[in-house]
Image 1 (cartoon, rainbow, N blue to C red):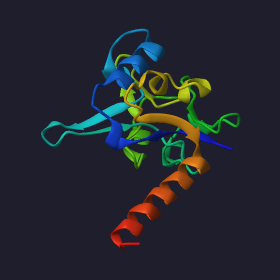
Image 2 (image 1 turned 120 degrees about the vertical axis):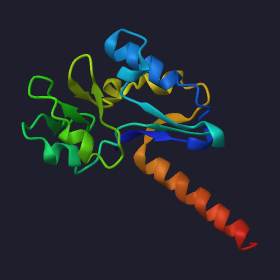
Image 3 (image 1 turned 135 degrees about the vertical axis):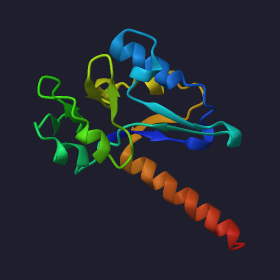
Length: 157
């Protein structure tokens, strides 16, 4: 079974802890601009949404890479970047339908979530519980049940 980071947008407080710990984990510096997760914020509405790689089964990022720097790793099913092949052209950044690819301006290379090799640091530090590392099928079933419950309430059942 594949696991992925599930985002509960309603639980997100906009604290940006996920960006901070991600940058420290991957770069050794507390620089959220270099994180593999980005928090999209609409402050006036109090709406916050962490954005990160969804590890697509047919990744658009890999399809457009002119150097073949992106590929699927079989262990965790991750889409990984071969840093030696990456030329920093940003074609993958433009192709990602989720806006989850980033650019580390200091290195001149693209970056994306690598699930911290199966132990996502952002999930461990998310005190609000907005990020969870779960089996994809279990999470999907939970969403179906929640939608059915909302529909049932609307229908007065």
